[in-house]
Image 1 (tube, rainbow, N blue to C red):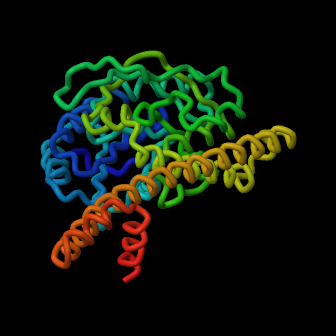
Image 2 (spheres, rainbow, N blue to C red):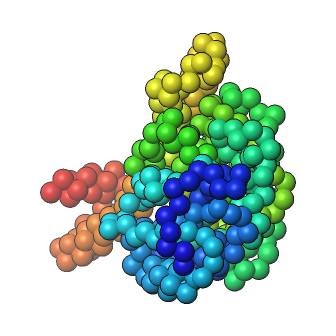
Length: 348
């Protein structure tokens, strides 16, 4: 491990870059993720290995691997005292980062050795712009086997800012991204309860700077069985959660437009157009939330009513058969009388 502190933003003409690995309860995959981080060929490189207060052995594996590292990169170990959640964890790591460009990596993915160097080369060749560079990925399952999926990254350079605003995910997978640190300086930290931070990064980059795509596979991105199942699920709970998260993201978009100090980047007409698009998306999402909540409540009510009806019918049967079989038969054949008595018992 190289214990020297890297304070320079330039070394031999190359900018200092940060490779930030975010982990939480990923002891099964963290070793491969760290191996990918430590194998990076770019220099000068700061590698931050950050654990969000895991309850398994994720951080212990980090410590063991760093203690055995003898390479050229500067390693920073961080373990949060409490579980911060995705957005606050990102904020914490960004506050630690010294690099001008931050290569993001998840604790269950595997970066190829040239990932940092290739993304940095693209960024430098295009003038070290503010924004995001990202690449293609290879999808794998829990065992590391390749998968066929239809959600690979896309080149979104032709999309307008309005199209970015109207889409929750324009086709850039968060695990493939590298962000310039000045985006965080410009817009400030992410809201602590935000879940879909990658969508916010993409919008901020389009709003304030540039987004460039490198159509090369530079990492293996892991799809877990639970996430594959959720992607294919039509559960109203999943739909409801998606729309609630969408509203959170769109509200951050609005805040960035109004308070991000980007008026000199976009015209007043574009600004008004953006706000109109986003407010429309929020109304649409809120309507979907109401519909989903209504369907969920109706299903819960029907299930409750069915079980309650069964219990009440059993109770009435026991009561009236105990009194007189003739009265129970009369009750059972008279639905109006039966329902009237049922309502009476509900209110007891």
